[in-house]
Image (cartoon, rainbow, N blue to C red; front, side):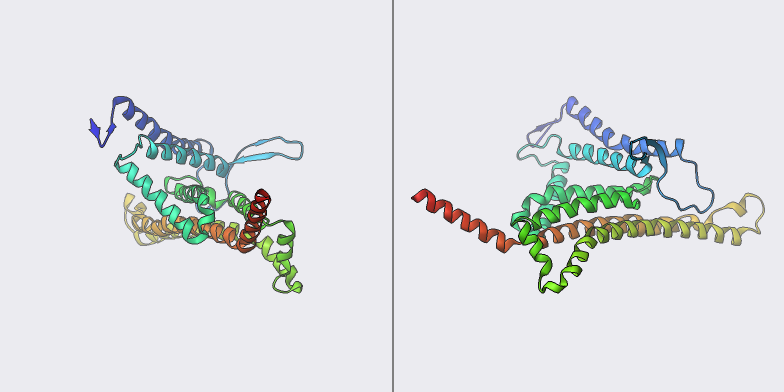
Length: 305
């Protein structure tokens, strides 16, 4: 069968199925790990990520936690999902997956250009990967996995990476310009500017972690409260009727639409937006392009002589 220049052979379909399996199997593996090695909670239990094992190191053990494993599983799943969307893309091929891939790329590029400018156009793949990783990590709670974004260590790692990028672009004009910026607009504000610099990764990490974790905690508390309400109202009924979780059917799912889906995707978008604004806002564009222009003029003058 041929469609717009793309031949759908049996081999093509087999590769499609394998890529989809590569996107689904890591998540199923995570669910199996949780069922086999993590005991089911009794009642209300709010705890951090479970520790599977610890790697002994000279300076202390390195715990391998549920959030670390799930982060890698989400990354592997996202990788195969990207390979599936890009599989078979050719010039002038208008398949549904190609249109979806094009839409994602165009929206991400427009988002980067409108918030960061032309100079940072190459940031689009990084921002797209950040959105996918954060969004899929938060949504993994829908299939029963511990969301990596509920672990401060995971989100703090992302914030540190962003902080390194911010510092790198702030130092594009040299260390002296970077250090001099702490004394602006007046020198006696330098201590506050230093505190603000250190607070940037902290605020990014705690904002993302706190919002995702709070949604998980609120959902759990409401589901438990609705279960208790069902028992109180139906406790007088005979037999199995008193155990029917009347108010736990449907209502937690509606709450999950906000706390797990909307809030998780919103926090991914906010984290990406803050990354773009902090990186582009810290870049001394005027000084950088002025110096670049002077260097080009000197080079032209040297070549003409």
